[in-house]
Amino acid sequence: MIMLKQPDEVAKMRAAGRVVAEILDAVGKQIAPGMRTKDVDAIAVEVLQAHGATSPFYHKEHYRGGPPFPASTCVSVNEELVHGIPSARVLKEGDIVGVDAGAVLDGWIGDGAWTFGVGKISPVARRLLDVTRDALYRAIAAAKAGNRLGDLGWAVESHVKANGFSVIREYVGHGVGREMWEEPQVPNFGTPGRGIKLQDGMTMAIEPMVAVGQPRTREAKDRWTVVIADKSLSAQFEHTVVIRNGSAEILTQL
Ligand code: MG
Image (tube, rainbow, N blue to C red; front, side, top):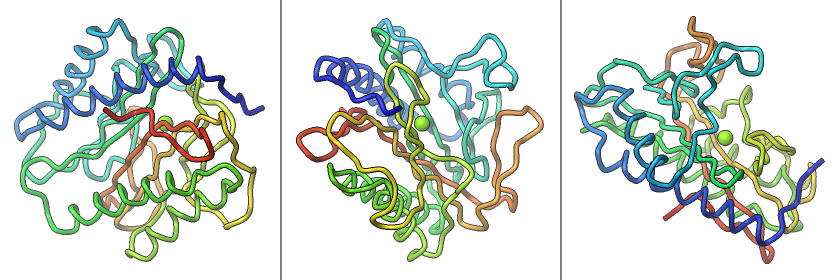
């Protein structure tokens, strides 16, 4: 069932989303060669604590059949697509780093991700980031009341394909609210005019995931990190949005 949100609930999600935006803004300002991925996570923890928020990603116990997740963000480098565990790994000039941040505030969740270049990055890496970010904003523009989920997915898929990159199909966006994973699933591919109809009150995490090479993924030995099977570069950009007055308002921006 899709949980439509009332204005007071959207206000709480906007507050949680703002914490996510502050995390990603702080990371973007500080990320640099020589930083460890766990230093990126520490930036997030500091922002979360300043707001009295917690991370929906941190799981002390086993989660959804997998091992515990020991950090507040997912930090995924280069061919790592999503769910990277922050560690002592040191970032180098030219890396691209996906940071997926979440916040729970007053019981409501914000979910957002950005992929950052570390220092000077290669032309193909730059283009991957530009295309994936633009795909996100095209999907947000397509997230209008009366449109269908397939319109949103096609907005991503068509833009990525036109630029010669691959859309990941094994991981998708999702409804979000009090729970991190609500209905519906929000794929980054689709057929225009197909799928459920979008309406006011829907809140979704829209999150294109794109690879330079083939889209097949595998899970790393840590049972969290998702890696592109052919080890090509990958990127993820994500915003939580609400459909309100007919079109999407981004909740995870400053
Ligand atoms: Mg998400």
